[in-house]
Length: 386
Image (spheres, rainbow, N blue to C red):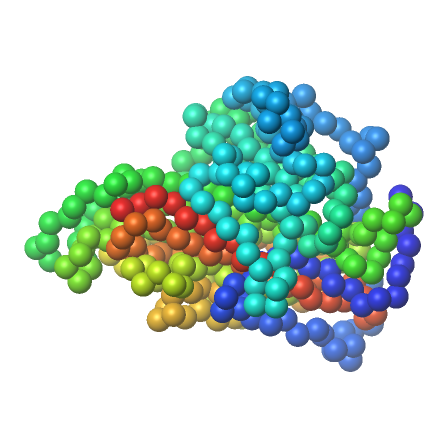
């Protein structure tokens, strides 16, 4: 489809923010941008429902189909559930989600719109994807194209939804304090969950010939929660959970990623949850970022590639949150293409459900005239624990 250009200021972002907001993203001044990098080269990404290749295992269903009990029960299908582009509410998706999910506005009243969910089953375990947009009246064809791309990658990686990838090994339970016994938890050690969130990030300035807005970037966040074991803290049994986030930005349609701010945290209003460790810390040199999660149990660590991206650590262990700002050099391959960020946190929980919050904000850039920032609302996830 042919692009049309409108003259309003771009707001090309839809990602998460939280009650203690993610770092603000300051637009780059024109004088700071060399003329040689004004034009970006990220790949075209435009959905075309006529030529869209839909795999036979991709099961497209509406909520009305489900109400009429016309849902397929195949174990080797990817189920794409929606309401023809209408915004989904919590009550619409409750039966597809492990634990509980809340989609809430952030401080400025802004939040992402949940347009569809996708789910598939591996070895009897259901995995759920959440598809968001930062605009109203989101074209369902865009979200469907996005879902097919995501599903095809998972289909390949899991050998047609049959091969389970093991993320963590179960460590032995140890005590934070010597000579204390450990009480068995309601949820077994080694329990794990995986959430995957996807955001189609639209420009509010650039339109196609059919009047729909142009997608500026795609942001994917896979969050792995693992109950590593039990320990004793202040004379009380606590569970220890690790969270590993894999957040990938992909600039499309001539835009570049300029900055991503991200936050993964425990529920700030639950006093029985504590942040034990997090990573990475501030890095502006070297080839890799390192994450090492320690405290109470054997450490878990991993690296992810820096690729000329700088990170500023904005976390607070005392206030219970990990948050980071990633800065991208404009004009580079990493700004025009894809980049994977993998921060993590380790937390302890002393009672009831374990609760987490996720948020992001960021900045996609096209040229001196067309740039902007944006945020989404808050996503809170809860799982049974003690």
